[in-house]
Amino acid sequence: MVAAIETEGLTRRFGRHLAVDAVSMTAPERAVYGFLGRNGAGKTTTLKMLLGLLKPSAGSARLCGIDVTCDRIGAARKVGSLLEAHGFYGHLTGRENLDLTRALLGLPPPEIDRVLEVVDLTDNARRRVSDYSLGMCQRLGLARAMLGAPPVLVLDEPTNGLDPDGIADMRRFLKALPDRAGATVLLSSHLLGEIEQTATHIGIVHEGRLVLEGELARLKADLAPEIGLRVDDVERARGVLRRHDLTLSQDATGLVARLRPGADHDAAIAGLNRDLVEAGVAVFAIGARTPSLESLYRGVTPSAANAPETV
Image (cartoon, rainbow, N blue to C red; front, side, top):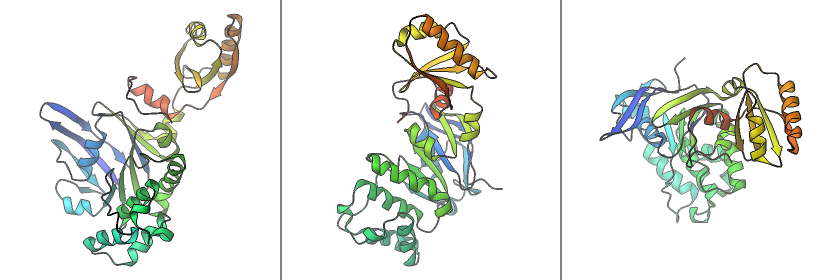
């Protein structure tokens, strides 16, 4: 089966700066592929090469088996994109904005009705875009990307600037896109929590290199088991826990103890709780928890102030 998105050794240099370093990634058909990395990691440069906006210094990129460099027009017919700058005309309605793109693509007028229905904008299609909320503009951009039913959609930070309700709406649309639009979605984002709730597959890029890729559920299942703890004295607890055979970190919920593969969860919880109490640390909560995307991310990239957010 031909992958929807595939790169081999994809590389891009800007002078002496190596922005993308031999990235080989694969997104299967009808996947939601979360593309993660901190600012400057090479995400946007990779997306631009996939869209034919930048020529690779080396390597190749294919959309549905079509080489982006050798057949730019053929590859362009396979992809729709939503980038940060929409470029909509505020004095025109949503329908009129879509009609401009439809006419350029030579598509029949009913195509507008189809994409408006997919993004739930049919009832607001005759309103001027200047009256749209940011979330509605994002959905209109998504509708424009889907004109012509391309089998691949490339979306760059589609939840940027949205309020919590808008983020929840966009998440719902993105999860449903493979079924509703029959498309593979490549989703670039800095929000680990949103990717975790939306993506079926992930790729993590760090300093221009793809450091982890695969089906999200399988990658999480392969992680070492974790124990979450909430205590009254984090520093004293750290001193106690360091005596155990585990890796210790901290997130928004408290301390996280990652056990060695094959470790007994129940025995570890009992032992940690006993030692903490004996050391005078009050334990408010302790228990096994499912490894998160953040755990995956932290495991393959050094911590940094500009790492993706966990909300």
